[in-house]
Length: 252
Image: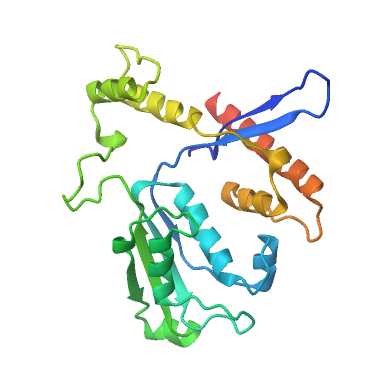
């Protein structure tokens, strides 16, 4: 399995103050990200740093995290969404909201608005158990849509031969790939280079909401209610260091 982080570093300042804790996310690589259902609850929404009434922000952020791990041209799918959402929120998540959110890119999904597909959950058993629900799928912009209508600038690293991968690295301005490298080695070198190009993030510059979103993205635990931003930063950094240790052990 792919590590959820590309790299993290601890940079010590010259005046021996608290170290800077920075890290870089790994570039998105999955062809599809599927969430069987999103079941909103006040506790879950508050744990992500939102007021329970702002259910659209919670939904939007959830899908944004899915988009982060999906490569361009890949699919994002969410199942079993309630038609009639919770009574405690004035905001509603209807079918049209997905299309509007995709078109506005308010939550940085980076999807093609024309690709949004909605399907009703057609099962008498599930309908009786859950009530009316529907499923949504949408394709991230860029990449190959598979319909032959690409605009000519899409890239599919997995399908590229070794020679093209070597040329691509040169075009990207990356370090030369060894002429004797295999296609898999060349592909990995490009992924690593692209990952190194990601902007660094500093734990100590992140708000409580950003830290909560980060932990969701990395698969970590929710912060305890009332946790201070300083304690949340420490907890997030400890979790990131644990991920890096796991990745190091896998590589060896």
